[in-house]
Length: 525
Image (cartoon, rainbow, N blue to C red):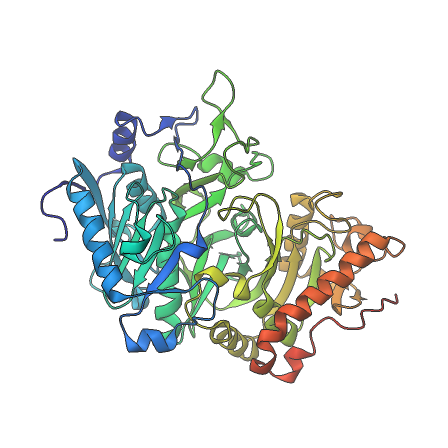
C-alpha cells in the first residue's frame, strides 16, 4: 500500500462522494441534482506542464521528443516529487481511493488505482472509467497508479518542473502524478496518453481521439476531433447507440471504448439541440465551472464568466441508448471534425484515402476557448491525428496504422467543419448544429452517395451540391464569396498555413499524400 498513515476512503459510492463534497463545502447541488464544483485556477489542460520520465531506454527511444507536448523529466526528479506528494497526502486528514479500469476490450484492459485529495475528483474517476462491477478483473494487463493532489505545488528547482502544476507519466513505474491543478480532465488525459503509448507500441492497435456510435444495421461511425469540435454532441444520437464519446482503440476486428463515462462541454447547452446530454445532468453527474442563474440553483449554461470550458462528467449509462459492452466491429464511416475559425472550409467534404491520411496528419482545427490554459478565443491550430497533446509516439505511427486500415476496408471518410463557414468567427456565425446533424444523418443514411459533387478549388475537396435539410448555398461557401476579398484572402492564408505545417511530414509520407496539399493558390472557379 502506498499510503499507511492517512485515512483512506475506499471505493465509495457516488452518493457518498457527493455528500462528502457537500460536507467539505467544496460543491453545491443544482436544481437537477447534479454536483457542481469549481476547479480553481485551472479550468483546462496545461499541455506545457506534461512530462514523461526518462527512466527507460525503450521509452527514450520510442517517445517523440520533438513534439511540443512531450517534455523530459529525470527519474531522480520524479522520485523526489513522488515522495513529496505522498508525504503531502499522508499529512491530510483523509484521502479518497478507487480501483477502476480502462479499455472495454478485456484483451487490452489496464487496472487503475486512483488516489485523490478531493472526493469530487474521485467521483470524476468513478464516472469516467470502467467500474469493477462492469468488468471481470482477471484479464488486466497491468495496474497503474494515479496520484492527484490539486493543492500540492511543485518547486521547479527541486522537482524539475517548469511550474508549480504538473502531470507526469512514468512508464517504468506505471505511475501518473498530477498536482497543482484541480482540473479533472488531466486525470483522463493522463490515462489516454498511457494508452496512446501502450496500444500502438506493444500491440499494434490504433488508439484514437474520437467518439463512436453504431446504427441499427451494425454500421459503426467514428468522429475524430479535438475538444470543442463536437465529438460528444454528434455521436450522442437517439437513433444510434453510443459506444463512447472521446477515446477508442481499433484492432483487427473491433473498435472499443477506453472509458466508462462521458465528459461533455456544456457551454451553450440546451435541451432542444442536445437532449441526451442535457438529461444526463442529474444526480451523480459532476458539473465543473458553471454558475447559477440569480437566486436559483438552475445552471446558466450560457455563462462563460469562469471559462468557456464548462464541463460535465457522468457514467455512460446516463445516456439511454448505449452499446453494452462498449465494443463493436470495424467502422464503415469516419468523420474528421474541424472547427474552422477562419470560415474557409465547407461544412462537408468527401475524402479519398490519400486525402484522409493528409488531413489526419494535419489535424486542422481551432482550439476552442478554455480547453487549454491561456486560450481565450478560437485559435487556429494544427494538431496531428486530432490529438497531438496526447501522443507520446511520432504522429506517423498512428497515421500509418490508420492508413493500413483504410486500405483493407471499404470505409468512407468525410471532413466536417463544425465551426464557421463563409465568414470568420469575427464576423460570421458558427454553423448551426441542426445543419451539421442533417449532414451527418445524410452521410450515414447513404443519401449523400446519391448526389452530385463540386470540386472546391485550392483544397481540391469534393463537396456535395445538395443535402437534405441543409440550404444548398451553405454547402459551398466559395460560390457565395467569390467577390469577397476577405474570404479569398482567408482561403489563401489557410492554404498556406496547411502547406507550412505539413513540411515536417513531407519526407515521411508517399507522393499521393503529399499531392493532397492545397495548390493553385491563384483561385479560378
